[in-house]
Image 1 (cartoon, helix red, strand yellow):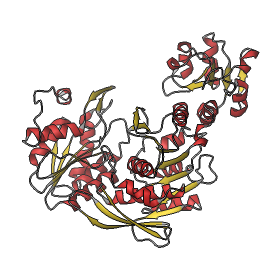
Image 2 (cartoon, one colour; image 1 turned 30 degrees about the horizontal axis):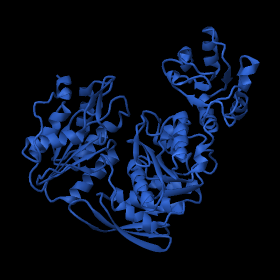
Image 3 (cartoon, one colour; image 1 turned 90 degrees about the vertical axis):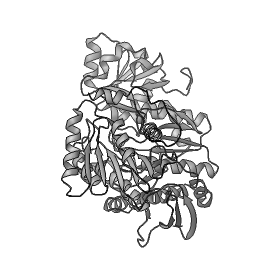
Length: 520
C-alpha cells in the first residue's frame, strides 16, 4: 500500500478499531499508517511499530532503532518509551496481540476477503494436507498461494518465511502480496500457537480443516485439554477466529469432539464410519508406496492413485478433497491433481538403486513416529530400522514416548541428536533411550551422538527387502545446536551414506562433518 494513499487508515481509525487511546501530539491522530511490523529495523516513516512484551525484554526497548511514525504498545511499553524520551504518537492497548491481527488486516486493506482461504490445523498432517490442497487446486484451475512449515509459495514461487503461521503483520502483508499477484485461493497451516497468540486475528477463513490431535507442544500448552481448546477456537461458532465452514476428520476421539464443537461440520473418515460426508477407502497399495483410493463424497465416488504411502495420507487426501469441495471446487478435477503430489520431507523416499526402502520423514511426536513405522512395516517383508532423536527446549514428556513407539515397531533403533538447541544433547538422548529400552521389545537399541554417523550405521545395517527411515527433521536443512543453525539435511545425508555404500552417484567423501565434530 502506498504510504500516501487515501486508502491507508489514520492512526485515529486504528485506535477506534483497537479500542486504544492515542498519546502524543494531536496531529498524530491524522497520521496515515501504511505498514505494520514487529521488527524495529524493518520500518520507515508512515509505518506502525508493534512493541510487544517478551519473555526477556519488552519490544518498546527497541523503538529507538525504528523510523516508524507511530507505535502500538501496552502500558509497560508506554513507560519505557517515555523514559527514553520518545515523543512519537502511541496507540495504547491492554493486550497488543489481541488487536494486532485486526489492525494489520485494516492497514493492508483486508486482503483475505478478496481470496478464498483454506486453513488446516491438527497435530500431524497439516503440511501434507496443504500440499495436497495446493496440487489439487492448481489442477482445478485455481491460482494458489501456500503458507506453512516449509515456507510460502505464491503461484509456485518460493517465498521464505520463518514460522508455520507468520506473525499477524507478516501474514497480512503476504495476503496483500498474493492479492496483488492474482492469487485466487490460499491454503495455509494454522498452528495452535498462531490461534493462541493472535496471529490469524483479522483473517477471513472460508474453510477450516482438522486432521487429528496427539501429544505435542505441551511445553506451550499445559495439558492436552488446553491444546484441544486452542485448536477449537478455529471451529467453535462462538469464537471470533472460526471459519465459515468446518471440515473435520473424525478418525480419532479428538476429531469426534471437534466435529461436535463445530456443530455443523462436514465429517471425513477412513474407518467405514456411518453417516460421513466424505469416506475414503484404500483399494490397493504397491511396494513403492503408491495407494489406490476411492472417495465417496456427497453421494458421488472418485478413484485415484495417491503417490504417498500410509493410512494417514489416505485421511489427509480425503480431508483436502472435502475442503476443496466445500469451496466449490470440482472433486474430479481436484483428485486428478493429487496423483502428482509430492511433499518435501514427508515420507520422502531416497532412491539410489539400493535393494531396500530408504525414507526421510518429519515425524517428531509419538503418534507420528508410530504411524510412519507402521506404514513401512506394512510395505516390506524384511526388517525396519529407524534413526530418531528429540528436539531440545521443547516438550520433554514426549521423549520417552517417542523412544517406546520406535522400539515397539522397529528392529533397529538408533537414538541420535535432532535439534538439541540449548539443552545437553546427551540428556535428551537419555530420555529417548529410556523409553526405547523400557518398551520390553527385542529391538536392537543403539546410541550415536552424530546424526550423520547414525545415518551411516542405519544404511550399513540395511539389506535387501528391508526399510530404513530417518525421522524428526524432514525438510529441514539445518541443525540447531546452542543458538547456531548448522547446515544439515537428512535427505542429503541419506544420499551420501548410500553413495558411500556403493549406491547411486559418488559424492565427496572428504566433506567436513560439522555435526560429528560438534559432538566430540
